[in-house]
Length: 496
Image (cartoon, one colour):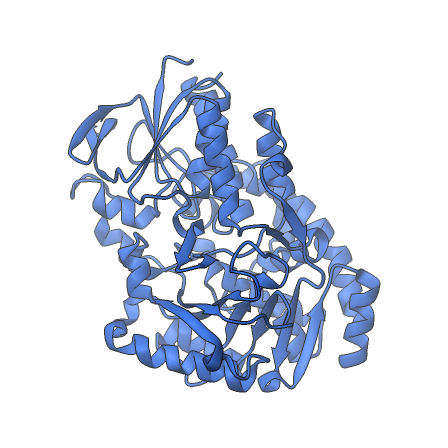
């Protein structure tokens, strides 16, 4: 074992991936998690006999996690059974009267686009060809640290610069490929993975929809939470420790240098500390006021944050023959997104997402029954919406939408258990302002301008997760763990 001891705060996917890599390199690693379970936002939620993913419901670009497991001498698929979904998801427009199934089969996708949107097939083929080049140029930027302004004149960034679509929104970029508004939405709704509007999201993120179409969408049997369970197993197999139910109260500082932490009122000494908790929440709860400048509570209040989500988890007494993932667009999708991200109000007509995982995964519910997951993007808590009184009303509105705009026409008759989760609940869970997808991903909060993987304001502190570079989403969170652990090795000699 390495003589240096490392603490990881938070057993979310970023913290677990970092701990797994370090433990496999012989480092003494201790993970602290305030919840009695691993996963954070990517954890398992049990409601009676029914199991759900609390947050993320699919994995794309699985090769990144496969590579991390390979680094530890393991095969991810020995720990998790993964199913590739075809189609990836079904998109419902015009209150469910028009459906477009999205597939990784390029010939089939071309034919489906031409059938519903004549003349747009050529744009799809051009999109796939050009975005493949774009991703190849941007991946080196997403796989390396950006903690110096000189990084902007590095060769990798200069090569990527023409592909960043600077000055264009994601919607602008897709307008170069498609004439149909619905088809543009079909390739830009992925901005919601960042909690952003396609009309404000930087155009470089057109790679998000390309990554789905190129690498597919995968469902781990038991839910995405099983990825975190698998990483936790590896950590313990490598001799690392995971202390569940031990929330970190604060960092121990000597000036600007961190030399340990306090958890459940017990003092622990560590040489290095990795923060995998929600970044803004951690900076406002673990660090004494007056310690930070760039990322002080006052400065954090001025930053831009993602939207939040209203969640409904339904245990049903029947199975529905409906697609695994379905996305249902508001009639005026642009207005819905504007109200959610700019006006900070609840839309009368909202978009929503449904996961019907029990269709292929029998582990989530008793035989003949199903676990249905419903997500509605809503404003974060900067909106000051009164969720204490809104929750029951929103629950009924979502059930109405399911019965009138989706194939779940009689769903109220089949509900055995029901649980809602509001932006206030997300905040109580440890998510700053309930911004489920973390700090916004506008250009002024990306790369160098995002909190650095080697945290710039405190010595011996490192960051992983959606609040640091390269950003939100499971593939990028796993990349953040690789970047951070390699920095620890190269700059601090941890795990050499």
